[in-house]
Image 1: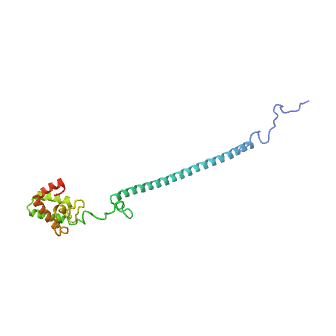
Image 2: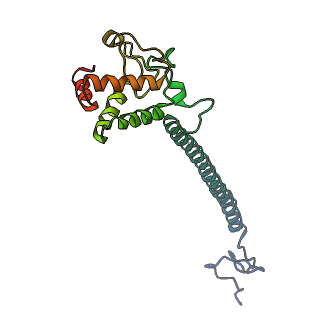
Image 3: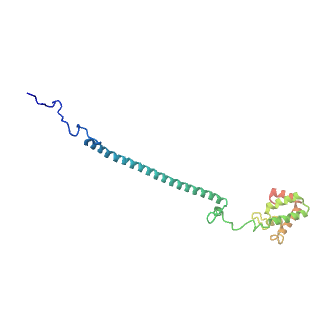
Length: 224
């Protein structure tokens, strides 16, 4: 009696109409694989976005830092430039340069003008007085050396100022007339430079003989 055919007990799998198990014609693989890939992609996408955001934030921070640094440098240079310019301006003012505001530093620091000029009212005719004295000395045959001694003497005494008054010694005028030493003051002496020069030349010639001898006397005693 024929034995009925049985499938091999060692292979219990039956052929699948869609193909072998574990295989699929879908390119993405079985559903389990697809789900794993989708989860991986979802995990990677946020990370990529975070990295991108961190990079943009870093660039923005660097740009802001550079801008702030540039502003600080500009402000510092501006203040340094102002400080330097003010220093130069002040130094210029100290040497009576251009005005600094309403007045120069020299004007601000200059002491007040004395109420009275004790050496006389002015010396605007000094050159004329000296020239007259040299001409009158030459007329007395005093040579150039003697005239130089006369110039030294009266330049030291009065600077050729006919309004000169020395409150310490009482000397007056170009030639230094002293009433305590020389007697009564000649008339018109204080107002006239020519009278002061004439009296001085006569006094030198009669007392010392020459201007150089009178100059030596003055250097030793400050009187003549």
